[in-house]
Length: 127
Image (cartoon, rainbow, N blue to C red; front, top):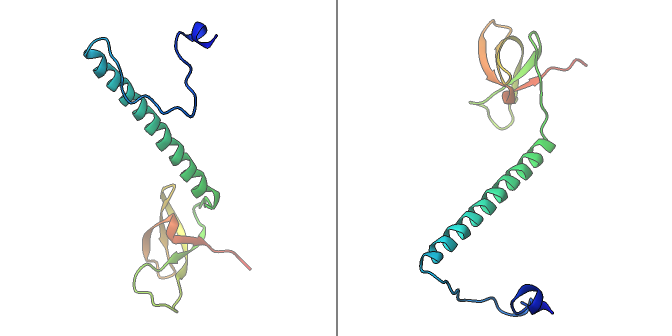
């Protein structure tokens, strides 16, 4: 019945795959290679996009998205010249200008201005 319905012998999961292909014309080999290549590239692209989405969800799961407004008091991270037991942050400083959603101009108590990234500042909370 299988041969009548599909016109070929059935393939069983335990049979080894065919290692040779029979083409009616020599040019058919090239079209087979192109279709196989396109299939592999599409699958690779789909796998890359899937892994990127998984990485993004893992990253965003533990990521806080701080939003700062003008006048907020923040601590600035000490990036250079810090020793093991010294303070990690200095301040407080006040945000005086927003350059982009992640870049700010802050001014400390000595009226010095610094351009900082949102990764390098922490909000000051009152006790």
